[in-house]
Image (tube, rainbow, N blue to C red; front, side, top):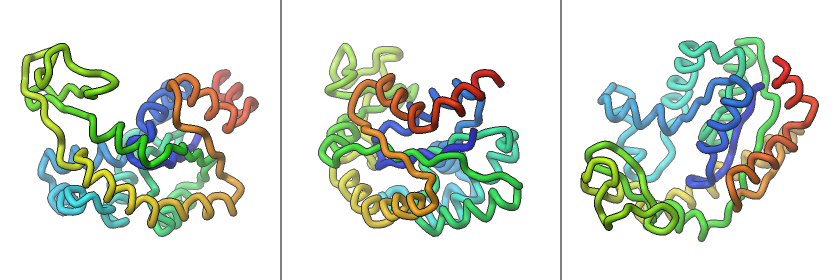
Length: 223
């Protein structure tokens, strides 16, 4: 199973990718997580990427592609993968296609999770992260027992710079300009399916499984 999940930041791609990876025994490749780890570890790639991420801009294609390819190599991704947050532009999609061709594989399906912009802003700008242990909360959907304090370690909660409303709206502008053309690109390749990203994770997962196709799902379950 080789899938790409598309959608704006906060659409729930990570949640769905993890569920799918567990179901199919595939590798979950989250480009955002790979980049944040590189930034935290202050690798050369991480230091270069940090400036772009802090502005809510897209990290250059060659940096992201290198991270994704190395992760697939380390995790035996040729046996199946769920790409989450990559590709983000047509140029990245073309680069991904070349990389997969060199590995002798191709995509099975591309699923776009559709969520209105206002819902995305509410989801992301309400996030709060513990400075101590990294636990995450949401002031509306998953608030801590005590405002501003982590349930687990009593650490201080804060809003990440890229979760601030102004930054979120900038990220959405970037997505609309750079990533939405991917819908047309993968549509022309007859790989695209769209699902409604508003609802419970289980409901969205059911839509994705239907989009993948019952035969493919059954084959994956049977190994």
